[in-house]
Image (cartoon, rainbow, N blue to C red; front, side, top):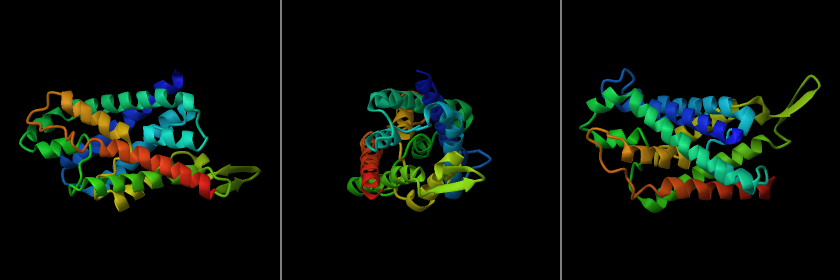
Length: 245
């Protein structure tokens, strides 16, 4: 149960800071409005880092049902804990998105005439509507995410300090932070790089139930892609890791 609690807290913080940077850069009268994609990608990377620093020592800081699935397929995580981790992550994502809305309530009110902008601070939507290609984009991006996360722990990615030898992944959250930033900057332009059902579906549900002024529908026709795409991509990334390494 302690591990589930830390997955909940870590994912809450990830979404609070990640959706928070989207809100800061997008909502009217925000001091950061218009800061742009680079700030959003950096913000999401640092959001992941913060969540990992919180949850890492206790739960391993998956913070993402797709990562949990990938690690289980690769044999690095027990299958018996997958559902509990995913439930904690999804709940954390919902609460984190709700806190963003509370924090930026005045700015959401000031953006009531831009429902698409408001939705974009909660969850992803494609730049060009093409469900097949949008799905493939999420598969490829998440496949890379899980493959590299697993590769970080491979014995070849090791360094020695004095008499201690450790994998690159052992230096903490920074390698994954850089990975998230890189994926966002390089592969995020088509779908907004969900990579994570807890980052997308949970905030989408929050958008659906919160009394947001001027909101549109929650994009349910697209909502399956940021869930199915990352889960499929994680499975493929784990399988490729087992094949290659």
